[in-house]
Image (tube, rainbow, N blue to C red):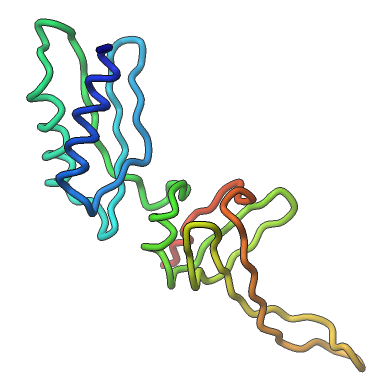
Length: 154
């Protein structure tokens, strides 16, 4: 078993014990720097990172292979990459980029195949002059999303 496979197995076991957490990114650089990024259905707190870090670190032997380990939560401004991240952000405003457009709208639903965005827009009236406010709704499949970020407003 390679070092990466060993770490991946320990990480998988640690996440099985914490079903509300899920993996966003996992990598090991050439200098054996292990980097793990987590998210959770209810967010990720410091204790979650400590627990996952210990589950990995305490089962590896530094005498056998030297390493450094970093376990962190996905940041508030990190792009969404996992369907579970979309589900936990229902009700928030997202900025979503696809190949042909960019939409900033409310995330109203998310399933395993697509997300649903809703927003209001001002468009020219069908008849007569001026503009009218219309309600827009769009379903966007995950494979069409180039980048999606939660919009944080103060």
